[in-house]
Length: 369
Image 1 (cartoon, rainbow, N blue to C red):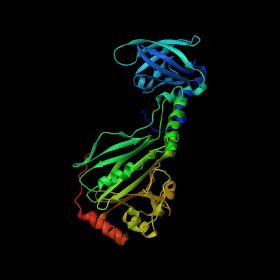
Image 2: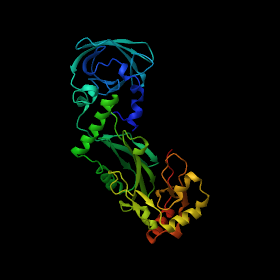
Image 3: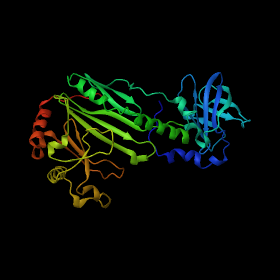
Image 4: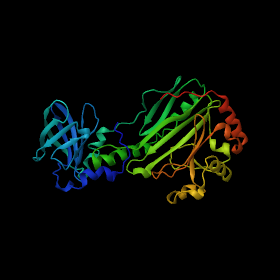
């Protein structure tokens, strides 16, 4: 599966757009051989891009034109295509290695489908050959800490976790996490539609970038961070949220309730019952600003909005305390305050005090780095 970070599609098109009209593009879907291997190739005329795959593997390889030469460059410059002008329904050329030992192979192709227009790579004749009903894919097991490990599970561009550790409640949590997958026909169609859109534009089947990872894991509590970057949206498509479980009961909890704060609903439809971001209560805000020695009147002019009421914060469990942090947006103005667990008592609810007592009584976990 090809996973492309969710860059703005405009950025992906920049290498093509300036000179696309001057490139002779053999648009359509072509079938034939590269050397002795059977391949299927496609070319998009609008932005001089393409893609091909070996029938044996069905893993698409992007082709693109650059201003510096007349070659079609494979992704990562693994090879260079030199194509002769198409003669009717026949296309010939030469592949040569761009790295390592020099190798040259003939390219022989025949036009299989000319109906795809300027975005042939995104049509049934090409993209459809790469699509199969998605299955759950299992990633490599990673160690979080001695005796605790996890692995990623993926389905149609979605990601969740499977956890391994000494806590008996992990079995129920794993079932809950696996149940997060949206396996509906609509979700699968949206997944393939996104891949086709990018294939038809730049010759690569991009998809939303979604990851999940343990953020905090002890014998008492588990927090998972879910991250999402929507393809084609640039930085504005980035979002994340945290979900926390009480490992004694196996039930999800919202740490914001330990402070009497109301959570702000997150926009990610896959959040389920995640905690989302929270807005500080007046009492909690006064406490954090005093603890962090933050004086709003001394804020730099471009950062004053960060000190206003109503700003959302992420709340995370750390090894020594709880962290309240504004999401970073690149200007360096975000506020972060971490308070040791023992110092939180003045702003905790009775339930929060009980939870923090359990945290302080449980042994810390030495996380594997």
